Length: 226
Length: 226
Image 1 (cartoon, rainbow over the protein chains, first blue to last red):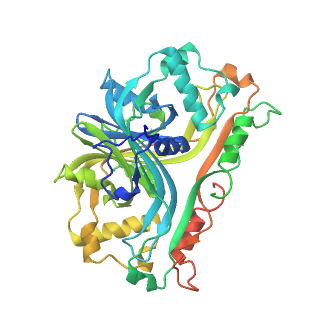
Image 2: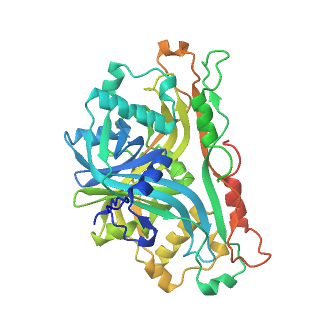
Image 3: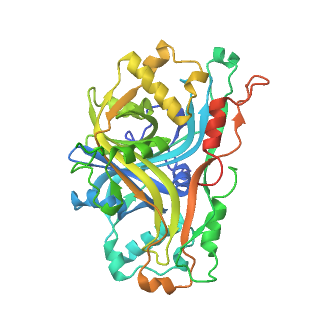
């Protein structure tokens, strides 16, 4: 029977430091990608690495990266370019009894591969829809779609999610046995990205309420960490 | 008279996309670096870029990067290695009336340079202190300092902050003039990293209260965005 767990491990994605925290199954990788809002895309130009933040979306087994990060990348590579896209969610600060064992709780994913520019208009439109709806679920259907000119002005890169790793740290500090006797507070300070009060655009038409997508996005970013 | 504004601009750090959002003065760069918690470090191994999240600290004109990101980097470079360290703070979601003008509010800094391993024990200790105190201000003095073995087991990289850019987006959506008539909510959903209830370590000694540093860290991550 074929295993239902697909591994995205490769020698290049094998986590070297604290390998216990690593997983390589597609489901874990996808869950973290879907929970993030921005990714950091790395590429090298003449040996110099660049890391730029950008919005993104996952559609099936492809990561679509918005062109905001792509202009410098694309000027030096007409075809595919090796990239690394990393998504990190900071879940908390871990306060130990020794400086050495301080840590942070996080979920992160590293995807390696060759990113290619999406030129097909239909695929590009679908990718942009995915990016908008990734940042604010179901927002696309509330707003005006891109016209031809806007579509041309937007760069989209596609990165296959074939080679990836996920790394997760949860829980409290792990102190050295002899340090547990120290009379200092130790534990976790959970962190979460929380939405504040929405700020209506100053030119918002009179009586236009928060849209369903905006409300859902606020609710998704509300309250204390589960 | 010498200008008091020091520019960190170079051809390599000159922002290509939306250059209006960019600044290069040291004070702006430092303010964003000091406000972040984690950075994403990029480096290339045989043309393949890697981007790994890690904790860091700024001390004067140097960015210290914790070795959690360094093992793969260092295995391929005994001396200095070109890196890019990027810090991004996601400040909000920007909902426009068209898909194209959706955006996010953020502050980000990109630092380019050659990172070198810190070997001098005294400098390394000072860097680690800065990293711990960057994540949880004044925590270092509450906990046990690293012993010799722990110091040896920790890698620290130093990156001079000489060549950098900052990019900032604030405010509401900028829509096309004809779209302002669309009857859809537009505005900002501010986001902020907020602390939840502290979770005491299960082995915390009876009656040990939250420490001053933990309390200050909680307060710094409390409440709605200013």
